[in-house]
Length: 498
Image: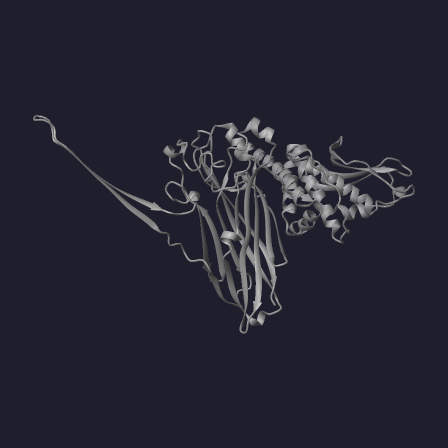
């Protein structure tokens, strides 16, 4: 079956171009917003007025154009402010925007959150944010409400729109309107829907490759580069796993999670006599693994907050896109030269027994080596004009890198193993919630580039490419299942040279 589909995202322009209400030939105007294929009905947006003469309110609906149309979503009534009003005005569209945004939030795990439009001045590109919110709503409606065949085609088309460069740029304005707290709830709802969708594809066997669902954006401002990203764990590439587990509660716990990442890098540019000195340092690197469902549901169908992935490695590569004007690159942290504390303990035991008994002589020698290392190893590396910052977690028992090894079956059942009870242990290498924070107090060493002075007053583009590995080793459950997944992201940021 073909899944070719098309999506019409410019709903704002369509609404603004509608004829005056008094000139409508019927009470309803419709627009095809998504077509799956010739065998399936289209998905339409309909706007209906409550009166054939002068309406007092309008209602928007998302419907499937079957022989008998089926409604998947209906907005709250948009009440008109004037009796002789012929068009939807700016305030009417803002009320519709708020209604759509709250519907998106209702699809998330937290039912007690709501959005109110802040007291801000509307920008010219608000229409793009309006279209993005509508696009997000249609994505959720397709996954949860639409029939399977219609859903399959339209979701793919909408996903491409949501992850397009224009959507990523528009999302910055949307996040500013929502605020940081609602941003997290927004992304949890979106990634919950994506997880359900991918689970359906996997169970049907129609997809051998999991579609990438990564939502990220980047901001350059006030001497700070910031990259924010969200990705459902189920969409991350599987790097390594043991044999499949039959524990349905463990499968549920590991499936319904998302990774939230924040990369904040401080930058400065100094004009020297013969070159421009660009200095970049770590401000904050944060990575958390959070549940996509409510605590109640996770406790009922999973193992609560006890069993989940943990960050095991984070790698960042910073590269100037225009490299011909780079004179040199420098790092400030040396490769590790750890101290070994070596101690020897020797024992000698001898005994003499009566005749006809054996003579027992026992000699014992023991050598112990103590290596003082931290669980997280940090390295700075230079490759051409690029600099790599790498944090890798190491096993507390044997010092091996966690991301590339498996725990032994013996250690899995040891209650004192470092990864057991890892979120409550006083020596845990994570936060209590299971994430990590790398801040400038310990990892603030800078990296720098010398740039040709000819580049003065120009804006340079820089690429930040990252890899995040998540690993699961059993925490409190007696399981031998382990896995490691990886996520790759790339963002482009700017820096204006003095």
